Image (cartoon, rainbow, N blue to C red; front, side, top):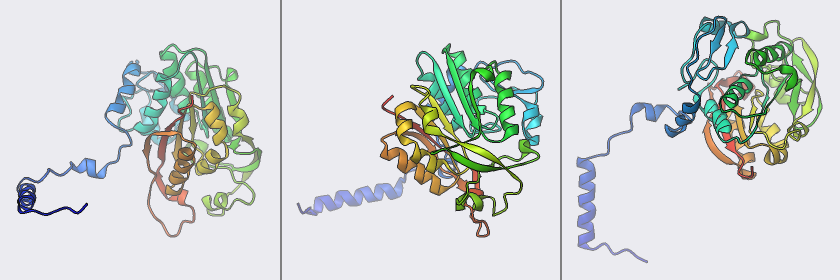
Length: 326
């Protein structure tokens, strides 16, 4: 149908144009133009049931909900937090941004009966502790925690961290090794000070991206077992939370175990380390009909002399996905 521009329509259009010129819409506040939070104001309601404001404990940094971390396990720059109680992590705390907390706490709020969480690339298990403590506050039982970490020092720190928060590490599923879509063997760089040297990933034979991540110089390395993630997920009928942070293999891992995740995982919180990984994970999860609840892209500084995109990242990205089948 052809629109007829009658004199009356032309006059009305001119009047609208004049009103817009005389009374323009106010520009968005500068922070809204420049800051992408990855969460909405409504999302912050998830903190309310858990904000108990515990007493401080010397030798530990304590979260707003009572989870605590032994400061001797933390990197040097975090040690001044000793004996403090942190407020709600908005827009962040010393190790994570709000979006990761929102996804984690939402998994606890939606859990019924017991609660199960798995952290892949767990380090000292911060999200096992955060989720486990929150589940305990809600009275969920039993609480089942699983952590996969290849670095021996960080694996020991995870056991200590769980014990410090009232979870018997011997009663949880803790695996010293790497995780992959398939089982195998890889090499893990040995670092003398793992506490201050984070960001390691396994090096697999013939995988160019792994070598590029270390700029071709892995240094001294030890052999580690790569555990197939799918069979580990099958050990529980439902995982309320799966948290993945493996410094660059997230896209490959999610694509390789998407069927197992769709069958056993209710919510995924995944850290990403390049814009390529942002898109790869998003493509896999959307194709499997998961629902994206929140996301924040990787931030990076382009550097022509660095071969690895993951090495250019200054802040991890985060995606929170909900499985509508569970």
